[in-house]
Length: 317
Image (cartoon, rainbow, N blue to C red; front, side, top):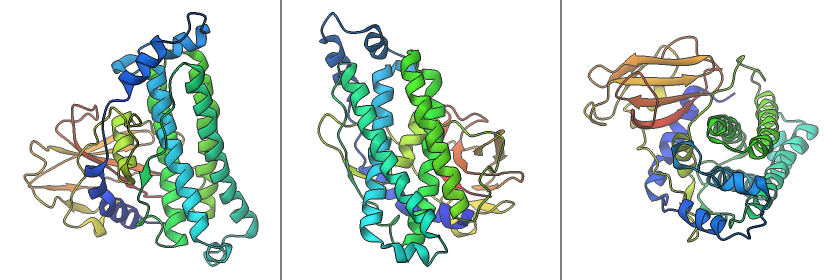
């Protein structure tokens, strides 16, 4: 089972790629495509084009979901092309588990085609796959499985976080049919990793910008017109990322950066926890389980306006 240390260190190592991730506007392009659709468009298509809370239309949210599914699908494609079954058997996975893991990748590819159809049906052009860098996530089969566990958890959190922004009940239902499968993926991978399949009574919603910050670490560039209108948060930089664990003291690489930092936030199942930053130091609290998202904030809130850096993913159980 991957530790807090290994996952945190891995995500911090990938963080420099976030600066290279594009953040151009595709939302306006989607809106213009929707507005030019034939007047006889179905009510569901019209609802999908309507602006949602925060200035995102349902089409924008579908495009965001498609971007994530493109990434996941390509991750599994590259991983299975690189590692033979014997590498997974060496980790203790059975033939049945290896087949199921490959099935996860096939399901993600199906999610891609399904979302493409939904977006096209709403009168917009689906975003295309980006160019990715999975070098640090695909160093070996063990790292691939550990990264898959994180990606699936983030996928669940992304759908949950986007749900309140959706206007159309049709779009919400379509998203729900995907998020339940993403949750099954994650439970299976947790079992294959030797972890408890259901570590908590709840899953954790994560807002689109925080989700994109995690995804951006793998994105090199995107085709013109397929760039999300979302800017990644800065990465968290620690002196002692290798020591990150429950009850440990974390030290920012620069106590004055990010400016205005007051708290370490731990977004977790069952509620958020905050620990005070003092001279660039904060404690990882107890009673954390499952996948936990750590952020640096300027108050005891995790709205976009209060987040200064992160998230990074911790896995206390």
